[in-house]
Length: 478
Image: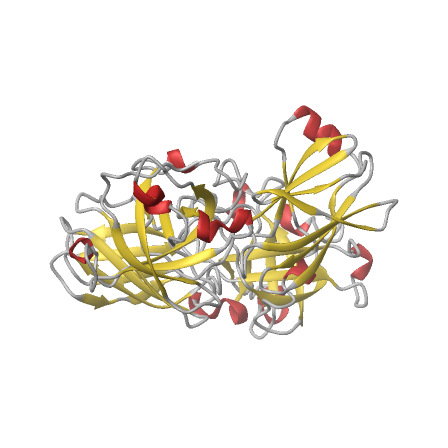
């Protein structure tokens, strides 16, 4: 657990629960080292905070805020208060959203228990925590299962929204819903023998939202846990259901083919300019879009959930009940050797998908299948990335790994010695600035096509090099 530091600078702050509460005064210290590695584990039981979905923007809460573990996973927006004593150490205009992952216990060797003493709202934050955005998570809720044949202990992780659990239930294949109780931190227990049964969970968040997560763990989950302690069972409760509230557009008809080989290696690169799609954060679930969908590169990075349509011609090659979410990374140009430009001809909604993604929804013998598709919110691991190319007098930046809407509507760059410079789309996801910024640290600002604006401050140091990619700690919610 985090330790108080009597000699450490106490930065005065205002904090608010990012979704619900008004600003309140408090204090903050830091711990865990410059890389935040010392903050792993803690009294919420999340262990490796990267695996749990929280990363380095985390904090240990004083007893008043920790609330016997009920606050585990909650998000707090914190800004330094220059109007109070100690405010001279503030970085003005900055704020950070942190997740509660640990307890900062009272230290009774100090008067009144120190900064984390009774009645004090205090945050012992990870040292590298920097400017952040609203509380959001990448991917679905996660359930880490421990216990024994007669006792289930489940650590519930990576919650968006309010971030924390008010109540939880578990259900085996051969049982009804079993009420769980908090054991410690974010760990919930059920005094039931559920080994050998597939498991479903239900959770009510502290924000009042109730969700049932069906068939999260297969019937053989106990065999995996027995072999690999701490195995992560990541919830994917059905792409269509998961995006029911995150959809950007309604369902539309289209068609799909595949390319790039059985391992998808032939899909690397492409008209969006991402290069190696693994390095860019997109992986093998990608697609080239027809001209109509590609929209001169404005759709690069957007996400589409696709399912095979069994009701239309070609539907016999569908894998019924399956769906896949892909990222737009390439253009499928018309082929005027074929009638009307082929599948990717003008006016047609077509996805030329990586073969591994396509094989999720269709049988490869079919070659082309009818689909239904919907643009959805993108989930990404880590922050937005900026790959820098160009010359001493010309900056070309590929903006990658965007969550939320996934694509860029507008972008700016700022050097240490300049103001904000408007960039323009060069091609695909590459944005240009006709400015010489070598030798200056670079910051970027981006407006997503979902309308969210974020400033990414001090992304690249003054010694940045062409051809390198620089990763931020922030990403988009929409």
